[in-house]
Amino acid sequence: MRERRLPVRAGFAALIGALWCTACASPPTTKSRIEDAVMAMGGREKLRGVQTVVMRDGTGTRLRIGQMAHATDPEEPAALSKVTETLDLAGNRAALDYEIKLGGFGQHRQEILTTKDGKYVGLENVAGRPLAVMSPSGLFSWGTQNHPGFLMVRNVITVLLVAAEGASSQAPETRDFAGAPHAFGTAKFSDETIGLYFNTQTKLLDGFEAHDIDTMLGDQPVLYTFADYRDVDGLKWPFRLRRATGADTIEETTFDRFRTNTKIDPKRFEGSK
Image (cartoon, rainbow, N blue to C red; front, side):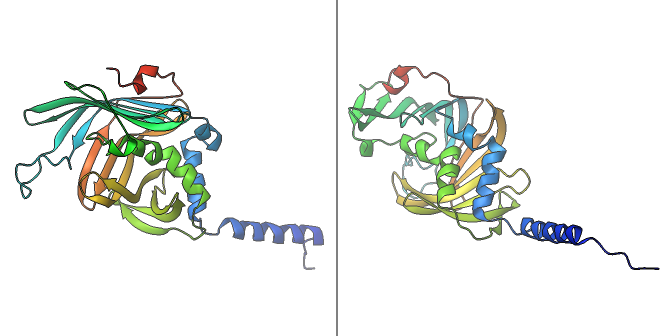
């Protein structure tokens, strides 16, 4: 029986196919993990098309508000309710609106970072007080963030798109996150390096670690968690957000309603109730 041989062309094609498959089997990099997360959320074009984000009817808890009678006393968590976060990505503005309750103390608060004549301005509107106009550095929050400006740079869209530009070309390592193994990689983000945790099943970004300026303690390492992703206007978006330092949760909030690219009432950035 004569030996059968592949034609030269067929053999060459098979060799190219094998090499192509070998290349496809190469381990993912942090950059490719980011691109997978972008696609899992809805795609780069869809994410770049988001101009406004409004999260409503949030409820949760907040610590780190410094209201203990003595410095060594255990801290009682405050309750957050009626939380509305408004993010104007196109206009570089952000507004926090919420109610906070700690024991017998309760307050409706708004903290707003907006612009006037091309410069950033801070607005603080607290029940029972006149509207305070201040520099952005004088603005702080007891809500979901320590400052509304964090909302502009710590949201999942900005984190993914900016991190993609400075992502590591190395293969991510495996690290535990929220009780499950995740792909962990690093990326340059503005003037710092952040660590990113990717869900290997959903491909989504489940969290990241960075440094934030704490109102009382200064520069602190912070772990952000994105959870409960749901479909919103053709995108996947996390409805539950958590911030923690070490093993201590600073804040955790779950939102009930979410909209993107909706028209925002101008009064939202004027401190009007």
